Image (cartoon, rainbow, N blue to C red):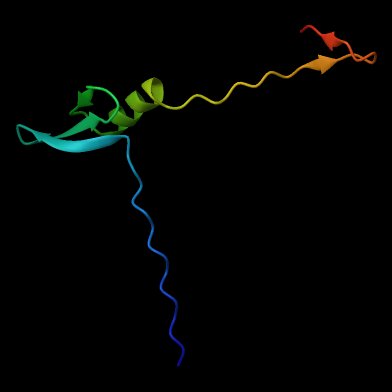
Length: 73
């Protein structure tokens, strides 16, 4: 009987925070700045999205007329 191939192990997803404890409560600490929260993961992810999420690369799109001259938009 043929053996089934083992599924490749997934690399652990690196999260934008670390977990700690503060007076018995779970504490979410931002890895990019000194911000932390006791409220929960949703508050931590909101902080990361508003402060640290990479911005999409802006690309310049140039339009030209029939004569090959750039059009100012």
